[in-house]
Length: 89
Image (tube, rainbow, N blue to C red; front, top):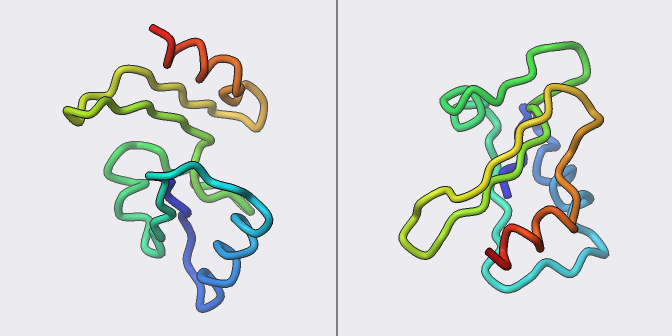
């Protein structure tokens, strides 16, 4: 998981984001304070109060992306059901 955004309080915001969440084994939260990753992959949502487009990528054990979904709005995000269906394939 990539948490984008600048600011001296980024670590605190990221900690709040995962607080009380039980992330599966193998998930890591990576900070992107300068939007380098976000910009490199065309995910930067450069608008007031925004950081990055809501995006989901599933990557296999060989590092190949086998599913991706990028929403250019707050709606249309990937659902848990969609992810589980893709993982079954």
